Image 1 (cartoon, rainbow, N blue to C red):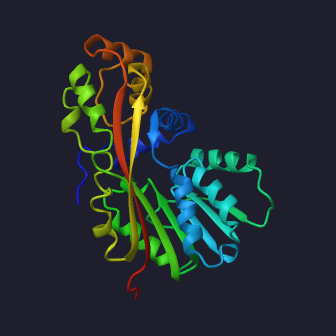
Image 2 (cartoon, one colour):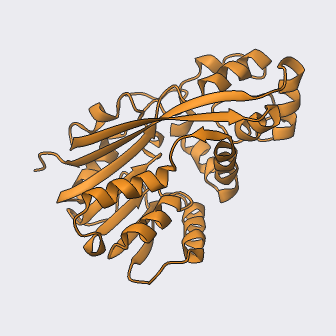
Length: 284
């Protein structure tokens, strides 16, 4: 499995993307302001976990690729597990997660939350120790996600559950067309999906060597960007495109370039979110 040209699997790109919380926060904010259909992902993860776990308060839970800690916080609030591991490769993301969770109004302090900086290919977590492992919107950062999934299986208890979440490969394709039509990246529609290594269409096949799917859900999220300024706010956070010098990461310059070729107005986009609930397969 190769990932040539896919920015989400280039270490230098992802290092820049997650160097501090500002770029991810801007990306998330632009999408949240545009979303008109689709449940909050962290809430869905918590609902799925609550439905499957028999005794959450005795569980050890790992949130891999926790990012800014939104899913970690919701899991802490909803499940109250005995121990919750917030795992990310970025020190900045862990600091953001710690700050967010520290500000949350938790009813008690029964959950021990540990922040772990680690590569998801080599998790510093004991074999078969976790009742629940969550990996949301992170597997597509691996050129080949299968070793990461094998690590998830390794740390999962025999009766444990994994919740894996990803996006469809064609997510936000309408923005590719807009960027190409505006001429700011004429090859935008030919560039690989950011989610090509782990998307809704291939995730079940990826996990088959290590995990067994017990349930899958697919939910379309719809977005309505209010205009080209709003689109530019999102595009400035995306590593997918090759924009002219001085334009990348500058939403005002991107918006000006878009308006020069594109009529301003609402822009629609979609992304299908896939949730897989899985258990350990035949482990040695």
